[in-house]
Length: 479
Image (cartoon, rainbow, N blue to C red):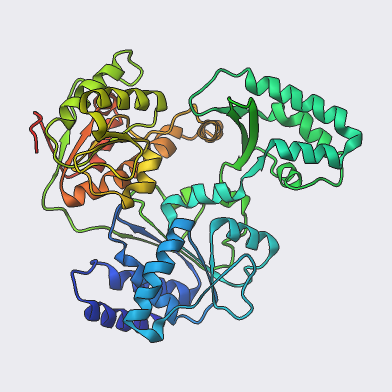
């Protein structure tokens, strides 16, 4: 049986490699093998920031299985897979070398087809997946990666191509473009340069395009992406006074309806909370593979009385406390804040105090450097950076309603009677927080939270529970 073979092979490989293994290797291997054999849906939650050595437990049953598979990974994970994990498997046991075939078109005789999420969408739409089971090892990013894969983007060049393809409608197209141009450019400037669009803003253009044929790409895809399950926004280039239209689905797996029907799927991700239903999955098996309890609690500095982020004194509060936190630190300090204006002001204020030690979203800091960054940047780059001595959370990673996609998702949940904050924004923010501080927790260091909402809002208790175990720091002492 596949589970027993995978168990024996992996146990032998781990004994051969030695070292201090991840505690769930054999459990993960058997779960994956069982799912492949039964062709069902299995969802495995890994602890945030867990050791990436778990990959060998996934690859062994994939190598031993005989069923056709589609292994779907992001471009960054593909690089790790091809350069580290697959060679590791081949060196450990040449008989387990896993042949992965790449490309937009399905391999004629290849059993394992390696795809990114955009290629997965294309293969599904073209009917090329056949009976292949799916292996999706990045569940924490699955929703956003599929949404980006389904995204339709209209640039100024696409408008020019449309006018050339439909010269009889040129006057109408120019009039509609000018209407959208006035609407978008008259919108108050925002740091992210994004302007949300309502369905009625696009309706005249959509009605016109339905009367025209043929349409050059990507206009047919934009026209097909319709309904309340999609939302649009414009990304403005203020220097050129130009904009691009973006359209994405609110629930990407709903837009790919049928992708998982009568098809096995193994989904793994570093998600500590939130039901897998958020991903559109209804797994037959859900398993949590957490880390063993930590011996030492996380030192947490979070003063009881702090201003809220909308307070006029909040910027000065951040600067004063960040100065005290950085003072005397021998290792790297990471300051995390998504508000771009606040982040740049804080970076400037700290640079005036500590000079070139302070950098903005830079991957080569000094040994005692200070990195000011957004949460997205830190989550994407933390594997390339030295482990920080402390992380300063200037703003908790709660998504802003000023982001058009977030606002559209919240509106859809509100209309359906859901608690959009506790069912969407808060779980998403807690997952991002745990992913962001996982390395600090495992290697030792200090966490500071300067967001007044931690103590001033009832949901702040859930943030503190997510960080357990921790010990409160009443005073700041240099490490």
